[in-house]
Image (cartoon, rainbow, N blue to C red; front, side):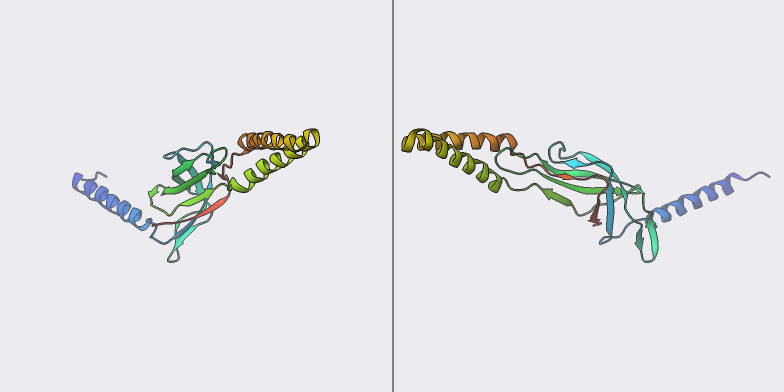
Length: 182
């Protein structure tokens, strides 16, 4: 049986319209919470603003009783902010957002993490070095030795703080993070 060109064209047009309607129906409305598992860890030490990442949905996305995207569907996103930790100040920070869910472009709220403050750790290391230097200097050379030892101890404590002071942060792989579609 032969189909006419007109009938073939009509069937193709109907298929295109139904695909367009299906794509519209799969749009995730603003305000929908989405849980995502990252495919790999994203660290403030190595990530750069603009990097992309992959993940999967941690659960079905259901809107109005209809499943829009199934658990395990692919997710893509971008790193919108990344800053590595300094040695004595400025802890690391990283922020990510979603760009697509199951092939559908989306905009979402961000997920951010910031490393711990350096202040307390540095104070302990530098203060401890100062006290230990003063104690050793005092025992070895009296008051003048204590002053010299305190200075040397403070320098040593600062060196330890600088060497061990990085406070980077990471978003772990396989951990579920919640985004809200905008």
